[in-house]
Image (tube, rainbow, N blue to C red):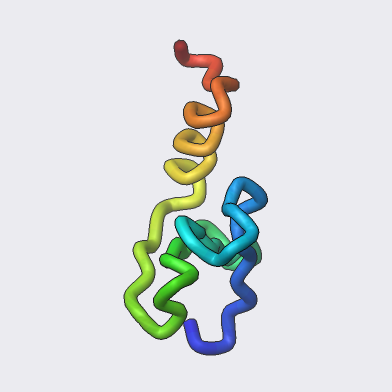
Length: 64
């Protein structure tokens, strides 16, 4: 993952705290990490599970 291009969440605050970063362009998986620890571990989710999580957080989950 050292060459991955990480993207910070648009919901993160501007001062660098409480930020999540994701990698968008890997087939079938979405790595997620804490932006305050860029060399630390990442959690890898199946892309479908990540999409369902984001939809639920946004309140757009059609399964509700």
